Image (tube, rainbow, N blue to C red):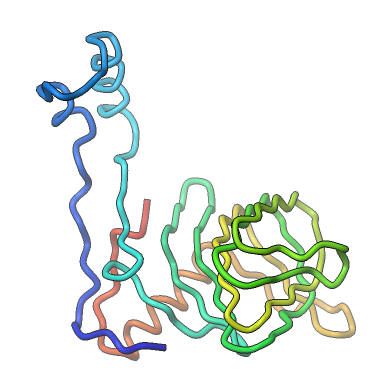
Length: 189
């Protein structure tokens, strides 16, 4: 894990979506589209930009796996993380209680129970109730969007623990505290 050269992970102000576009002469939007965008801007959550290098950091998770948080959403229980393997690693059997999507960024990964191996650019959807055992090759990086909780099991199939958006956020905040970093509260939506 590379050390950060600063003590704070910045929180960027939320950008105004329609404010800049309404007066933008370069915009190709019609007046109707601009007015619809202004309404969406007024009543929706703001668009967000998170720099993977400056606004968040890698932190240890379990075994040889590290996480880089990108989003924590409390309304839906959704969180977005990049999972990275430092060595060829198995993550114990776990069950998804919500939908999970994955995009392979680097390397290869798979589940013991399935007959495919995901490679860079591959997209995977995992439905609620899915149970499997994750394997990641050394250097694999996968972007996961997780809704709901994950249940992890001991080898005897008894429940080891359950993790959700707050469990993953807690690990990030504890890592930042231990490293003397101010966590980026801009990861919350």
